[in-house]
Amino acid sequence: MMILLKKYINYIKNKIYSLLGLNLLKQEAMLRLALKEEGLNYKNFDIKIDHVNGFNYINGIKLPVIYPKSFFQKAKKLHTSEKILTYYFNGNMSDTGGRKKMLSKFFNRNSKLVESDYGRSRFTKNKFNNHYYSELSTSKFGLCPHQKDFVGNPETMWTYRFIECCMVLTVPVIFKETPLGEKFLKGFYYINDEEALSDRISYDHDKALRNFELCVEKYSLSLDVILKLYNGKRDN
Image (cartoon, rainbow, N blue to C red; front, side, top):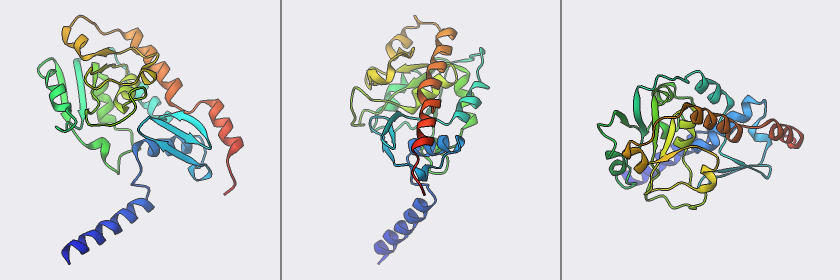
């Protein structure tokens, strides 16, 4: 009886979360907010999310992961040349994904490593976490380990954290044990964990700034896409 009651309670909770839009992936929650900021209602479009490969499809238009423009505006206000940390990480450190072991090499190297599930909360997926971005912006390099147990396409493997580093002029550090896809990395400046640990590479502000500019271009809704969506939106 208790098992059936728990299943029923979970069923009701999931129904409520679904009605309130709280069961969305962060990827879709941010896309909906990005559309809203452009005066577009997500309900007027056929939206499909490919989370494994990091793509959005709106009425058949293929797009990468999209961040709301307000995120970039807020991130730009945090840009600073006062990089007091060398390395920063904030997120899940599950043992199954191997992150804790990969990150352990960076303890006591002028680093701040924070174990947190804030980014996975169903209530904060489309919110700009000012505390997180502020701390990230004060670091020269941002640690971007993927998870070893994640099954995906090696050519398109991606992570939110890489994009968010670029948003605040923090150079991403990718890990050789969990490589990201060449298509995802194309055009961006980054280093790998072995290079970081060698201490041979210094922070480059100009390259970090170019990362930000490319990030805005690639991961926000362009005027061309917005016009296509205005012209192609279906009737309610």
